[in-house]
Amino acid sequence: MTQDRTTKQAPARATRGKKTAARDEQSADYEGFTAEEREAMQERVREMKAASRGKKGKADGEADILAKIAEMPEPDAAIATRIHELVKAVAPDLESRTWYGMPAYSKGGKVICFFQSAGKFKVRYNTFGFQDAANLDDGTFWPTSYALTELTPAVEARITTLVQQAIR
Figure 1 (cartoon, rainbow, N blue to C red):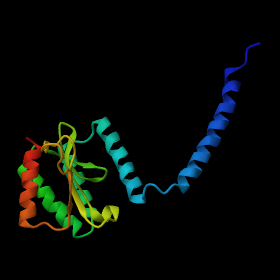
Figure 2 (figure 1 turned 90 degrees about the horizontal axis):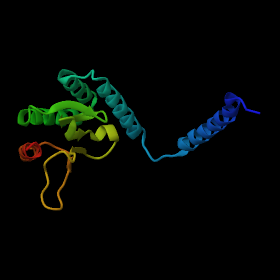
Figure 3 (figure 1 turned 135 degrees about the vertical axis):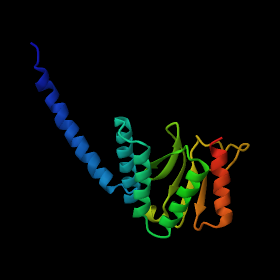
Figure 4 (figure 1 turned 120 degrees about the vertical axis):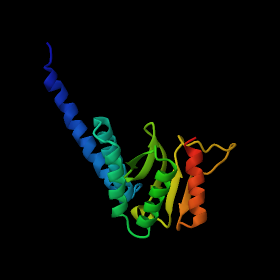
């Protein structure tokens, strides 16, 4: 005698629902990610979906960055604005975009450098960093992220040099 497939699958669905409910209950207790980190991950998912639809152009990326900077508290917004100006002056061909909801600059679809607001993640300093697509290799050990609390002429010069090196 043959069993009906829908009858056979029904218990599995019921079990899967119980497992999902148990997993949701466990994740509610899990405190591994902060609310800010979860929000950044959700923003990244939205960015990836928009990119897969092919609906974002250069102007959209620029507008997205400026909107994210406008949401930042001071002095983060002022620092992010100046970094944006520096990166665009040094590397106008880099594509402006958001990455985990923060300003980023890419080449060929790969992020080269990014800015993270201290206020967004409730940490003590902003971060200006580089991804592995950046050409910063220097021997067997080199920095890829920098803590940033203030933009001085020396810091601006260092950022300019690093971005120039990163895009070679």
